[in-house]
Image (cartoon, rainbow, N blue to C red; front, side, top):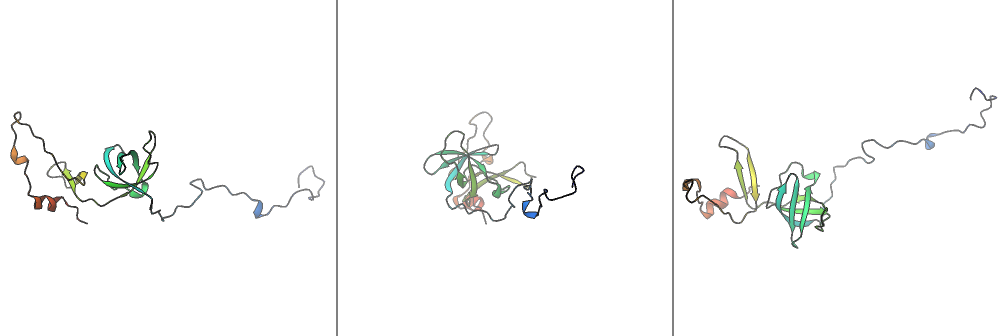
Length: 163
C-alpha cells in the first residue's frame, strides 16, 4: 500500500521464495572439492630447463613445450631431468602453456648444500646418467682432492633416491 493508493492491494503482486534471486558466491560459484582428476591422458616428457616457475619440457615425440606447475603438486620441487606428465596445450606453438600434473619417481639425483653447516640440501639435477667435471689445467692449480672419483657401487648407493 502506498500513500497515493485508495487502499486496495489488488494490483500489487504476491511474492514467494521461488521468485527471489540469490546472488552467486563472491568467492566462486562452485564449492571446492578434494577430489582431483587422475589425468589418465597426460603426456610424458622430460624437463630440460627451469626459469622462474616456467619449465621447458621435451616430449617423447621431440616437441618442446612451455609448462607451469599444477596447483595440486604444492611446493614439490621440479628440477632439470625430472620425468613429468603434462596436460593442456602440448602443441609447442609459441604462447601455448601446459601444466605439469605429475612427477615420476627419480632414479638418481645430484644435490648440494650452501656450505658444510647448512642442513638443507637443494636438488640440482635428477635422473642423470653421466656427469662431466671441468677443472682448470694451469691457473689456478687444480686440486684433485676436490674431485673424488667414486666407485660405481658407491656412486649409486649415495645418489639413489630412497623412498
